[in-house]
Length: 216
Image 1 (cartoon, helix red, strand yellow):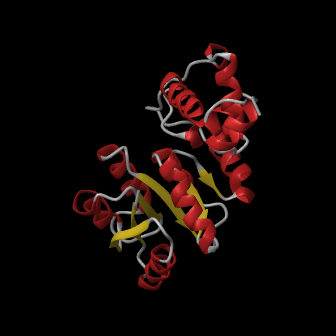
Image 2 (cartoon, rainbow, N blue to C red):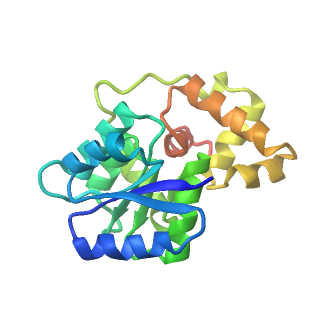
């Protein structure tokens, strides 16, 4: 299956570089580009991407609001946030808005391609050395007044708790399946049930949930 990717960044040279990396990879197709958040939202209808590489600091509508609108309008689209800063409050807000991943712009080409494939599979993607900072910043910030209520950890089954902990450790579905001696399809089913039961948007929010409750 070909993964359709859109690139959103206000710098033309950055878009060009990302396009070159993605088009050189098997199974990826760049279907559109945008220079700001307004254009990014329009891309969802005009290009029907599977994944959007989203800058956060752009003129007119920034990447945070664009992410929120994209995810609300088309929940199946995965937004992968790219930033030049290790700790960027705008990127944190993008995660809250529903982004499926968070990477630095200096990421190697192969790692970027792997990240696009990973978020398409439903895995979360975060630069390893900033995962802890992201979690700390997220937990330290009071949730929005309209944040959904979450059920207590005690309401999870033992297997669901194991999957939550594994997701929080950064394991992919395939790695979780190997560790728990179950099929990858079973892991995907558990993750879907966990997201529904906890009223969480994606796997990154599962990571936050685990850290908030000292499960990791």
